[in-house]
Length: 342
Image (tube, rainbow, N blue to C red; front, side, top):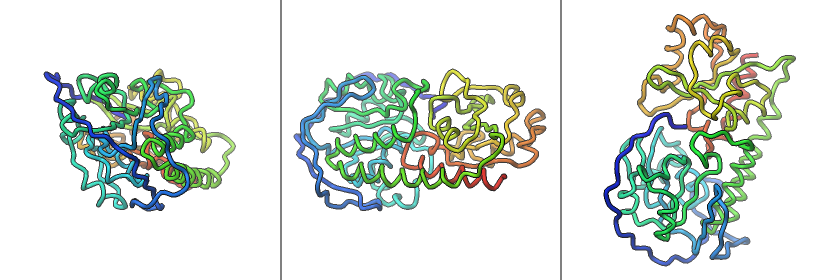
């Protein structure tokens, strides 16, 4: 989820030299490392439909640019992190398990900012993968058609084909299918299937541990503030899906977008039983969970809420609320937090 965008005007296109690529199968052995792919293979070229756009992949990409940290982390867990030629939009500290691999990847943007089109082309990518529609614009990394016309295939997560628009079938099935499709694109289909299977097991185990309640708890997914206004999860995103999985009610499930600009008056009127805090380390005001709690406790209105007075908070890394490798671990964290609150 992104609450603001920094824009600049691209004044020129840089020449892009693309080298022919041949598949180099690799696989994830369950840890963030490259292993030999066996069994299933990808047959090139092939075309797939992604967010309504035909994407033709002629060979296994060797110089990938990921437009955001979450996208890079997924490829690392697929065992192809050594093929990432650049990344951007870093919003938090890299998980220790993949930090060594991630730190080898050139960062093509300023901290917390998007990769600009000229900088993207300097990396001479043969594939571009991103998690936010707002990044595939002429003001940022370049429109998808523009890149396709240059011979660079792209992939945009199906969770955000249109920026912040609710997606009716946003769930883990969609995320796991993204792993499979990326595995096929990168020439490591078995790695994609393995990652999907492993994470489904994590989700299923956590859901099985949910304590039943006579009446569902009402929750607010509190992501961030922008100029003092709170942003909360609405319908059509992973937080809404998570709410249904664990049997709670998202108080802003009737919002118009999956991430909604709300008001403290609305929060107070809907009076959540539990507030789920996004812990962010971007450096923006009230980004960390600690800062959010302090804000809620000192505000004259929200300090009177039962959830705030009773310290009924659950903290989840902010990036896990958007689709990515960490999203599956948000389920056991949420279930454990809810079970402890009783």
